[in-house]
Length: 244
Image (cartoon, rainbow, N blue to C red; front, top):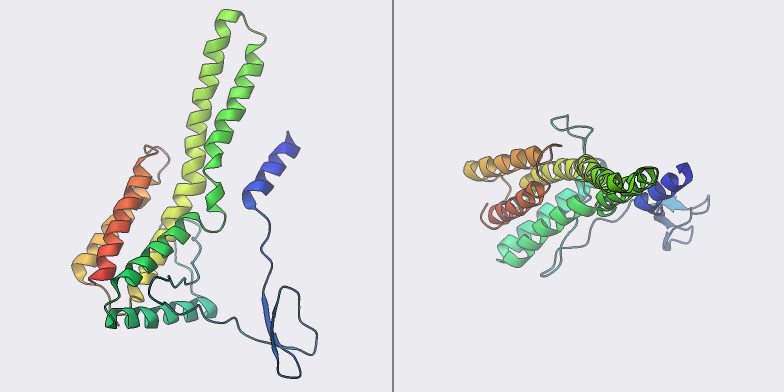
């Protein structure tokens, strides 16, 4: 059982991503490799994100969630700061050109990364694992019971698996998603290519949506409330991006 649990954890985490090295050799030629450069090479900083062109989505480095809701937000690393500033400049260019499609695409791309990046894409499997394991346990225990008691035993364990799966979904998916969305969308509010913060009514609207999202991520909320709040937040962010 411990071995199976370990394999499940490894499957959820996924393979480690190799580090990319940017370096220049003594002859002045630049290289990009997944292996460490030789000792006489000059390490270079990672390049900034690609320019935001019509139909393309500039992707800043998503800030990962803090330890808990309402906690102190993480300070940006130099690379993150550079990426957000580059995005700010390119969104300003898109606004000057009246490129509404790019403005909406950047918002949607960032929300998508917050929802499913860093292994979160694998978390929806947890409720299915919970129901399957609890159902198997109920079936195993029911083997020693009279025939009339087996179905209620299995049904009870399946319901218990559903409840436990819902708690796992909130703890390992909805809660991190709510944190990442608030932190990164608040950063986007400061880097929208306008040189200023959104209007007061728009800031109040987004704060209301962030709070609603955090409430929907609480353990005893209905499982369909959080996706509904994400959809509402997505629409509110699109409105603020287009008309800040």
